[in-house]
Length: 242
Image: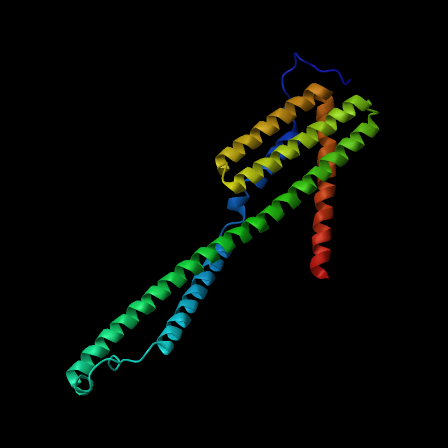
């Protein structure tokens, strides 16, 4: 029952199709978790930066020296209305330039920092969601393999190969996700890589168990996946209630 069937065509297994869709959904998290929430957060950060700039401008204005002529000006010049007017204009223009320079520098600094912090925060949140999803997925796969191995009295050698297929697949998915976060892969490339993993695992499972047994193994996977995600949802709901 466990011999490979080299002359048989690859079987389109239902659990494999489910795995592919779940994997692609995980790899495409950038679009899933982007939207109006991100836009509102970005707008809030922009408003905060503008408020900080205004506060800095007021501070510079309050602490700037008042116009009224230089200390080295002659008494006669200081009493000359035209001279006082020109001096005031010069000082006011210098003050405005100073305010503009400091405001621009502050805005650039805040913008770079807040955008960087925002991106890091979003990446961290999405990474947590992705890894939680993959952990639950892997838990279901391992449980299915263990049940199948016990029910079918599978040999130790075949059992090890079954678990090896699972471990290798999830390890590759996690590495591809890290590459996606680092910008080494585009979303399209990440999806293509996920397709390669799906094809590799499908062929390895069919070659190991045979078409009919692989199909039955798929039923085990569907059942254990359902249990794993139901358990996760129950735990999350309980956590929210507490």
